[in-house]
Image 1 (cartoon, rainbow, N blue to C red):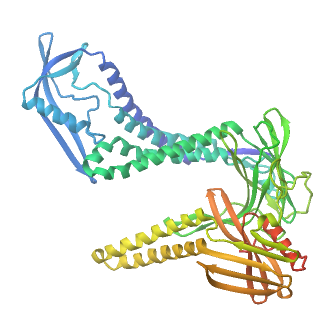
Image 2: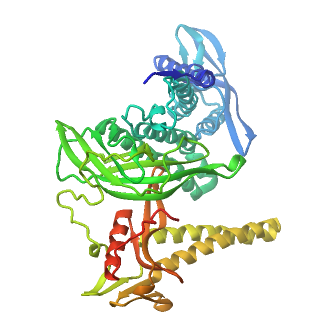
Length: 583
């Protein structure tokens, strides 16, 4: 494959401007202050007297900047000198309480006619200062601006000059997997490196904004009292983000690039999607490495400044990868799935496109293994994979085999009779979090309603929107927490009863011969992070009158399919129509 770098000179120039501003901060403020602080430590001192003092203040944008000023006189070797430099930093600021404390101290000395200590440059006695201690909080504040502008500029400059690798070889019509440089050589890299960079970038800019609050916490406490604790939350979040960024970096160093090779290449709609991942990991046959394959619709919604990208999972399956010993501290993780034939194939990135994502995860001592790959899956003539493992059914050493009955909350099973019971408080953490989220929205609505009497009718409208959304979410979460479901197969009929707090909500009786199909149906999707989603499947019975839920909260397509097939056998049917991708 012939490739070249397509450099972006516009981004490079843009980055150079920001980088220059950052370097300006470094050479104009940080380095001179550090140099002055260093050389002043060796200056001798002499007694001086204040001629005038003042504490000037400047108000702007809801903040106050202070400047401690003084003019003083001193003698060196019988000669009199005057100067007005108070500290290493000569400009006003509101970082901490240094300026106010210094100003009050100088005013006290002046009013009481007390002498002050003056430190002077022995090579040039006219060069002097009253306070030669370094203000490290000020240095840190200035370094934030240097790092922000310089770091952003250096990153943009690097990305612009590095450019993007593009395929300059002949185009192969209809074979996107050979046109995209990320796929063409069948060595697919994860997003771990870019995610780590993004994590550091977000952490950096969050701390850029929040750390000045930490430097200024004394001033905030004096003005706002206990509310200063709220201001501290943001720097604390910054420290948490820093911990995650360090954790991500350690994981990257531990496991390396982890290249993925597909077999077959590309993955096949209606056939096998398999491959192996090379990872820096000591061989352990008992290690459990979860692998999840997802078909995802990525799209942009909204308009103008409100445009944002979202992801919707159309189909998902999960299981385990098999560990194959390769060589010392270098092993292969093999996986394979069989996917339905009527799912969308991989597409070029656009405002709305489909992609296939593979996630692997393993909890290990120290850094956990977690990688995400965008892989090519297309509708091409079927070719069988040489990989023998079937990830949905494969179980590592020490992991129990999955059967339909192990996935169901069975309370009674005898012959053709089967009874299931889903109690209250299923998945309590998820629903409690939803309840808190809804309560937050409803609380905003109540607050806006109280403010509307003063601010006008528009707030009544906004209050109604927030209250309806928040109240609706809360009602849904309460129902999810406190409903139960009982399902009973008696050999001829299926009986279901849904209750809420013990009160019957819905009862259904389905004769076996009226059931046209039993299918897997996506019921909900949750997002663990930006690139990992978790689908919950229900198994439902279809009749001409509608659909009835028979099983809930199955966390993979294969598990839902296994349960559906089990129900088919119970009612004397063998054909299962796979409709798990329908939403």
